[in-house]
Picture (cartoon, rainbow, N blue to C red):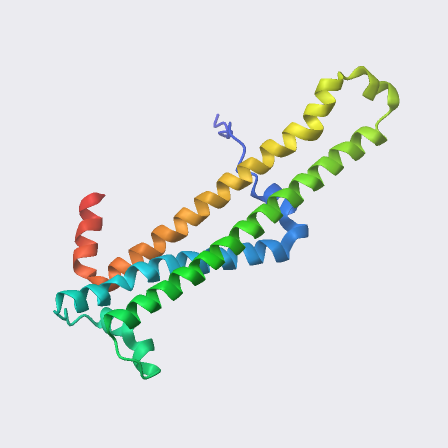
Length: 193
């Protein structure tokens, strides 16, 4: 007789997370767009160091990547010298910091909106519950459920956002490495596995 194997661990509750963030679609969209843009600008700012080092060392590597990074300067008719590339790097850093601030704003807005929604739902539950059932609960438990539990739930979301920021930065850094020298990047990647 064959028996079905039962999964002892329930699947990750992605549908619950999606239900929670559903009312905040615009904030989530702005969060993710600022997240991707700030991560891209972080890696782009680092990549802008390649042409700067080439100018300082007075040696061109012949890399297409370095030429592509200085192409915006050539498009507007500006010479690719130390001052102009440094100003471009500072501009990229300034824009990156702006997007990082927007990302932090939208992250906190999302977290506090979810926290408020959870607190209101728990409070409404206790207000609509039979009085006898509510009065039997200890006051500390009620306050813990209304204040502490939503804070713990949203702190998990905050950790998730920090993880996503790191993940996107790693992806963009890896792309920069691939554009710099694909063979060395692939050799090092396979050797590290």
